[in-house]
Amino acid sequence: MLTLNQLVIQFEDKTAVSIDELSFHHGEKLAIIGRSGCGKSTLINHVFEQLKPTAALCSQRQGLVDNLSVFHNIFMGGLNQHSWLYNLANLVIPFKGPRQAIQKIADTLELDSPLSQAVSALSGGQRQRVALARALYQRQSLFIGDEAFSALDPVMGQRLLAQVLASHETVIMVLHDMDMALTHFDRVIGLREGRKVLDIDAKHLDLDTLEAFYQDSFAIASAGGVNDGNKCVNEESEPPQIGPLSSGVKRN
Image (cartoon, rainbow, N blue to C red; front, side, top):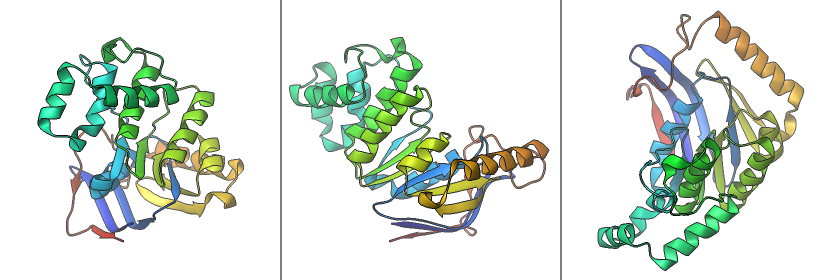
């Protein structure tokens, strides 16, 4: 599906991601793990840019419009499925078909707020489920998620993850929950200081191994940053600069 070769992503003069080779395959459920600031969000956003025509993204940033309703925020995931005239009319008076489809997704995600409710009035967990519903409404075979369940309690997160996995042929997801990574995913990628240090079938992992990976990452991060030996890069601080001569992409 996608192979990255010699990928280097920088924020100004700081390297956030430096990976020699990393492949993603159709039909697999892949988890990306690592401590905060290790390059997970930077990597997954780059992957989404490469696969955008066939992928749905649920980002940490959510990208919700506060003064619009739950319905309209979710419907934005399907804007490219209709003409601009249809979308404009649906903005004024929501059509029955999209309204029913979106209500079904909301029910599946246990989102109990009215579809007419402004997103600005929602809790953090509700907002995250609206962002998740918008990604599901795109009806893509590939789901890319960046901490898509971080604002939810673990039990609900497990239930909704099962819905996402059942609805998509391929899933690539950034996670902090080690149990989710072990029990729901085929393969686990571990990043440390922007580099791939773990790439293994989940069936060969256990919680002790993952805990050791995180403890080692913490020790290194405490000593100093992402690839420059000085400080950790804040992934949200600046837009990434990708060196075209030092990165390669191959689609399968």
